[in-house]
Amino acid sequence: MNSNSYGKYLGITSFGESHGPVIGVVIEDVKPGIKFPMEEIQKELDARKPGNKEFSSSRKEEDKIVILSGVFNGITTGMPICLIVNNKDIRTKDYDDLKNLFRPGHADFTYFKKFKIYDYRGGGRASGRETIARVAASGLVNDLLKDINIRLYPVQIGKFIVKSIDFSFKNDLSWYDQNNYKELLSYLTDIQKKGDSVGGTVEVKIENLPEGLGDPVFEKLDANLAKAILSIGAVKGIEFGNGFGFAGLTGSEANDQMNKKGFLSNRCGGILGGISTGQKLTFRFVVKPTPSINIPQKTITRENKEIIFKSGGRHDTCIIPRILPVAKSMIKLVLADALNHQKLIAGKKLDLSDYREAINKIDEDILTGLVRRKEISKLIGQYKKEHNLQIEDKKREKELLKNLIKKAQIWNIDKNLVEKIWLTIISESKKNQ
Image (cartoon, rainbow, N blue to C red):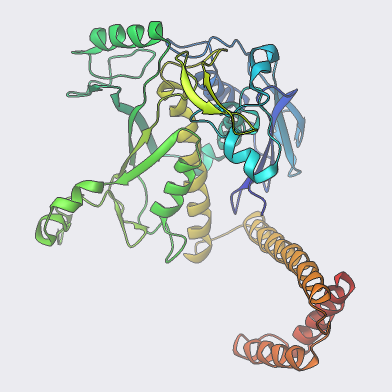
């Protein structure tokens, strides 16, 4: 499973670790002739980077984009775009004492149990610096999203909850309740002095979203948004519309009734059956406190020895201000996929680039399927050898081919072509066994 790749119509693959040489992303399926939005992407990266906001990590990184391929004279060429950001303010010594222990709240334990090795320097691949790739890639879909407005802001930080919102009130925390802002700053300063951290809740509102985005059953818009948001390391929960509040409502209270002018309410958050209604799309997600804190905690070593551990290094007292551009980037990537797919199925006028883009993604899906089949074929071969089973099963092969030919006839595909492809696949599979 290629878990470091994302997207169907704009394919991205991210790479790099917190204290490695670079963090980077490869972006495929970008149309040629597009002006590369360097300034827009850099602005979003500046909002995400450490050291430029109150109560964020003191790590100082420029996070300046370096383009390695796919852009010529500021214009996309249609070739894969590779972007990197250099890691400069690296203090690996801060993590030398972590080689043989698992930090509470981090991915050290699970990475080690899965891979038998992990990069302990700042979290390695599990670090928040990985999100640079997401933010950089999302800048390439701005033209596609056009008039869609995405707004994110915290409605809770630690014990403080927003009671009134004034978007004209600007500050580093993106906190729009000026009535309790000074008290919030004092609270966070106290948390910081104690070496502790806090989490919070972020609200998202998406306006001017067309109806019809999302697909049943496993490609629902809310399901894809949920996966994208939950893929951000610090996020631990999400709710759409009234969310968990639905548990206390009756059906008559929960339903969004309609008249000829449209919906009378929006308790479901602008999504029904996994498909956008055209209303404002709303959801909230919860962010856990930064697990790196300068307070003694119990943990264990690789040898299962119990110890008391206190984190060193540079950490965020509150990660929420830096997570906002990351969450926005994931929302943009999800919506870009949904818009591209809807354009294909809605019968709208497409140009040659649109058709080629769709074909390219289908070809990639075919190759991905073949790679997975090859891996499974190897496992089947090993299993048969270990259990002294017959490698070939002619009867099963004939039955499978018969079923495929039936389906080919239903789908109006040349049965001879299907048979030729199938025999080729079987032949390759036997080589692996």
